[in-house]
Amino acid sequence: MSLALLTPGFPGASVLSIPPMPGSRCARPVPVYTGDGKGKTTAAFGLAVRALCAGQSVYIGQFVKSMRYNETKIEGIFDRMRIEQLGRGCFIGHDPEPADVGMAREGLARCRALLVSGSSDLYDLVILDELTIALYYRLLTVDEVLDALRARHPSVEVVVTGRYAPQELVDEADLVTEMREVKHYYTQGVLSREGI
Image (cartoon, rainbow, N blue to C red; front, top):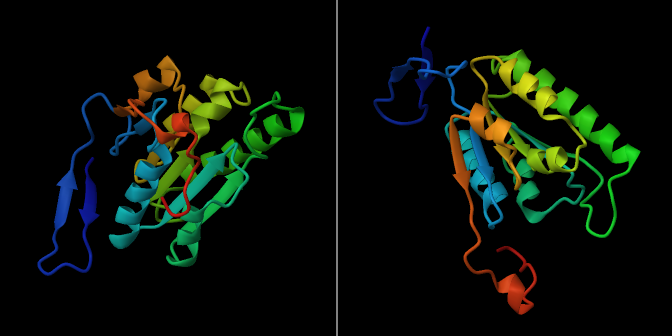
């Protein structure tokens, strides 16, 4: 079976038939952006913009996060996009609580339903932002995450982000990019900057 892709809006656009990747269970590969460096969510949002500009629909589920950061404003620009916060915030200074586990489980159930449905029903691209943080803090198990990824419809592209990607997820992924911090202005006391 092959997957047909069309790039709308370009003169001479044509259908490209892509066979499933050897060794992959789906026609579309699973990328994971991980590591201790800056840029994992930024890379995923860049991919989202690329997909949206190609006429695709995008869902971003942000695990652990509860704040509407500036990048979430993109939802108001594109009508084929939905962003949801699936958490109560980060765990700096305290341990996760049962409510955090509940929200992560509900979030994964929601995302699993989107992954299984197929792009013709809802979304072409599903981004599971900071999912690996939910795994690291044991809000979810690796097995239930892998089960959701393996159950997805072949037409749905999925991206996973977050530091501490477990080896089982790395093994399952078709592409893993590790963002490595070489130098960061945060160590010099410069906090996040508006718009950057």
